[in-house]
Length: 375
Ligand SMILES: Nc1ncnc2c1ncn2[C@@H]1O[C@H](COP(=O)(O)OP(=O)(O)O)[C@@H](O)[C@H]1O
Ligand SMILES: [Mg+2]
Image (cartoon, rainbow, N blue to C red; front, side, top):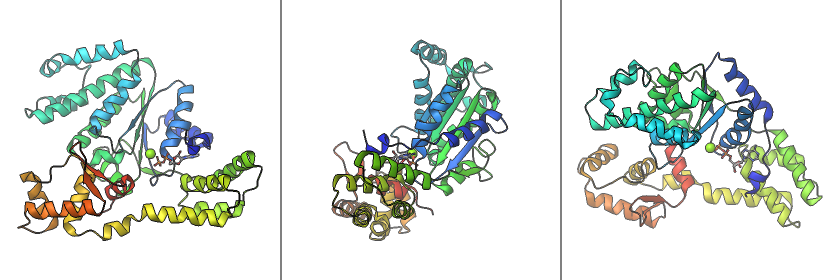
């Protein structure tokens, strides 16, 4: 187990406040924003989930970050996992096995909006509406038993594809139908991208998720907690003032502070300021994303962004080539140029094709960073 997991600083008051808001029913869903690595997921899983479960909720957790599945599949998977015993799941799936046409008019499966989708002839759209139906059907089964708290982590991913947007709409429809028994909590780490899903006028979850709230970052009490744990295990005192400063320096992200403290534990000869310097150097080495980005030319950047969004991108497919030309702004860009750009990206150890035929980033946090670039 990682130190950061062993030393989880609990936030019961915050969990209680969030749950009380959702319980009150004035809002049925809420969206919280905070940058990456500041503790959203840990809070959801370690604080909010157990509290909600103790109050009688079934908690469903879906992480849409970097999932190799589509958002729809990830949401359905999460609901399926919550649905035990599996016989119940089988029942739902069996019911859905009847041809989709036959489901039409069965009010128990979908409201008018979903029904509208079913009639679309196009196969892809049909697949999406099938997923939407499945999602709704799973929520129906789950909410029959207990109220459901559905946590959807890194929800800005819903804005990345047509499918994601359809899922966002499906969630909204489902929420409207089951608002007595269903609560949604979304998180996100890109304010702009959250806006595409939640707050812009034509955003698919516009009215459902209300405003985007800032998730309170960890503060002094977290630093004090770390100092206490340090003292317990080393019998030494941590310089609280310096630790607070360091924490701010690290963007109030728990990991770098904890790593600094770990270095102090393992090497008692190290001074605090040396440990912080080491940590900063390490961060600079691994986190100079902007520098990496600036070293790329226009074609390389377009490729990097496409691959970050979809590691199975086929850069040489005709349609992709057209897209790349348009985004780079060079009409006669040829496949050989792309080939060369990909070789350069591999040489710079940014992105390389894996033996599994997908492109892989050398440094996943750079891929994260690229996905969150604001246009
Ligand atoms: N309350 C906490 N106490 C201790 N460590 C934490 C806490 N919250 C987060 N962390 C650690 O910080 C790191 C980033 O947290 P995470 O929840 O993954 O952030 P986010 O979901 O916002 O990207 C993880 O290693 C996690 O264990
Ligand atoms: Mg997270």
